[in-house]
Image (cartoon, rainbow over all chains, first blue to last red; front, side):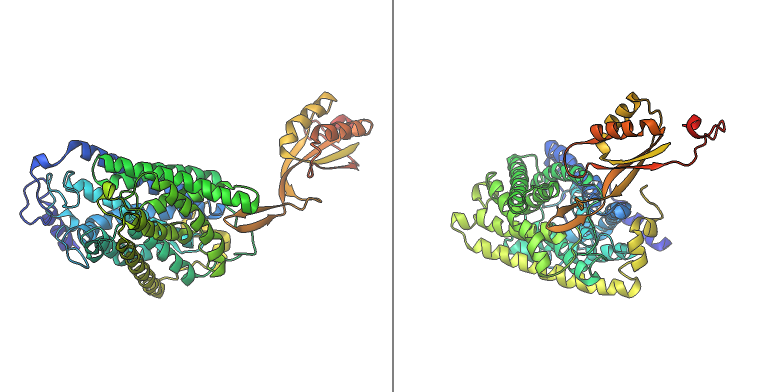
Length: 433
Length: 112
């Protein structure tokens, strides 16, 4: 242990001085743009806000009162755990080195990162800021998965699974799509994480929900949400945070970031309106949960397309998101009989999948430099389909194996008695009164 | 002496309290309860999942009054708690055999 710490200290030492071993190009001091840097600092803060308090409130408002703290604890744990792992090796394996399958360990514990080093993917901001910004994506992706197994996963199993999932699902996917891996070389479009974040988390959640089984009382007892007002507040924080999520993915304070933010906002609006309208028609009442679900579905669905399409495409993509994700949460889930507690697959998985494909349809060369189906480039849709297939198969297969492995060490699920008593008191020794 | 027990809609509490105070009823006990009558609860729908909620939140008011004003008390509760919609509640009146004020030891009607 002491040896490891000494090694870490030695490797971290070059921060602040010139490093010769840096793999990302070392920029001249003038290459770093202060406006871009300022915006990306804000965007980083916005995306971190999406997990706590955003996702924590969104999720915990939808579970029962006895599981509110445990649900928040999962988001909190993702922030703390993944941040450390990201600095230790996550960033380096994702964004340093340009191998087709995985990055390198050159930047482990930020070794060789200097005040003026930059990453080739974002040449006008400090590499440290790019590292921090991408950290917030890894955090929320891992935190998203937990919604599928809310109300029943043992906290220790959640921690082990999250670490393993981050290493074996998130890191490779982020490298393949964003870090110069084989999907990025093929031209797969994923501006801010339709594949890397939403489809991968949704698929991981779906598999976890299947492996762990349904909640006790599912379909027979009242599992209605504790406090949807929390979920509404969480949605608002996610929504605003998404401006940093999609706008920040331009990695610069430029027009493309603004276009992405407009498309994002419009997709959230049309997604909420669509889901609410369908419920109004089908159930005679537009539910608040439906409207916020539609908003999040619109946000997740526009994510991969946001920097590649014209702003008004956001409206169309949001309408598609509201309709398709509604169908996934109300029909698909019951047809295949899985208990995805908070509809992570239905909202994020299906949303990410839909948005990735629609990016191939609506991609506008004047915005993102790539033409889609509507501009006479149908091959882009096939490339997108390939990206979806790879992400789905990888996340599903690896998540399944990891769950089985973690299950060898710790039971994945709490006992029936603990589940009935609630995870707050049985996992954390605390409860809401 | 009579014990008047009224099950009412929660948002009607203030009106009922004011009406009872106006006829000289000075004390009451209020409890948050859940239950259902003929309306049999309601259905809630969350992303397509339907839950039937049988037990609806209500307030249970208990007042102990002299027999001669019991009918009046029932009347003002009825008038002030009524919305005309299903689920307005019920009133039950039962005799009280004995009453005692703990602080002074007074009994029966002196204790009310």
